[in-house]
Amino acid sequence: MKAAILQAPGGFDNITIQDLPDPGQPGPGEIRVKLHASSLNFHDLLVAKGAIPTADGRILMSDGAGVVEAVGAGVTEFQLGDHVVSCFFPHWQDGPAFPAVGNFAHTPGDGIDGFATEHAVRPATAFTRAPRGWSHEEAATITTAGLTAWRALVGDGQTKPGDKVLVMGTGGVSIAALQIAKMAGAEIVATSSSDEKLERLRALGADHLINYKRVPDWGTRVQELTGGGVDHVVEIGGPGTLAQSIAAVRVGGHISLIGVLTGLEGHVPTAVLMSKQARLQGLIVGSRRQQQDYVVALEQSGIRPVLDRAFPLAELAAAFRHQESGTHFGKVTLVP
Image 1 (cartoon, helix red, strand yellow):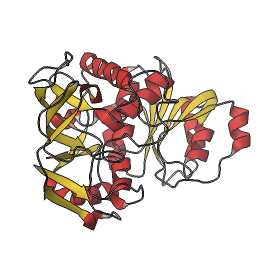
Image 2 (cartoon, one colour; image 1 turned 45 degrees about the vertical axis):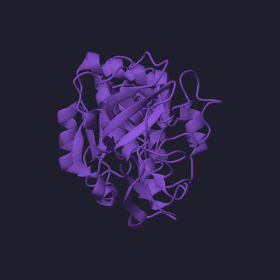
Image 3 (cartoon, helix red, strand yellow; image 1 turned 90 degrees about the vertical axis):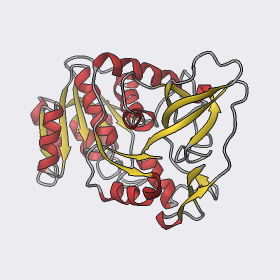
């Protein structure tokens, strides 16, 4: 069985393809899955680069989509041939994140082996059904990026028709957030440094477009476009963009801090945040129950994820380099 392995201390040159023993048949409560796709996330990138230390010889990738090929005793939720998708926090089944989630100790591709491989045997509760009719590549986008956007806007943000939502950039989470916001009947402001990408966001349903390179004070521009600010911000940048996000949110609005693309710490304009009486909430992905709800919503809405480019397992390092370049639009996927 082939798998993409990360050797310590990390780095793209330390990703190797190795032949590993087959995981065998599932035990009680487990399923065996033939993996057909994964998708790349910023978290996977940090692990691969060694910025998030993990065990030497770790199988990479948090997202996994495939087909059930064996079912252990006591499993009734899945049958042979079912299409499934993995959970980012397999031990977080339902309810609030605390105290279930405080680290990545149980996250595939980080604390435990991931899905850059051909087969996996895991507890049945580590997967949900994939949306009916979706390809494996499409389904693989749900685990991390899609569910993060769903939790930010629906689980925590409770977005409703007529709300105003700000999304940033053209990565997987931001595009999923745009689609979810549109599905909820929201008015959407989208930012990017590329006019070409902005036009693609318009085609996906964005109502207002801002090139943040040409409009550095884009938080004020958001206020002008929306008549007082947005109800929800899906904040992916972290310290380099948070001040503008606080400027963009309305009084009493909600900022979901889901990314740190510009760094791990920095200045926060606390006085402005207080005067806005806005809620700033950090979050990482979601529970299995939220993923199941998201799958139902996807099936009913008919929206499909935006895929950028697929790479074979043997070219995972090249896939990460493509992701890091920032030239992609939507999700970069891996096909084991």
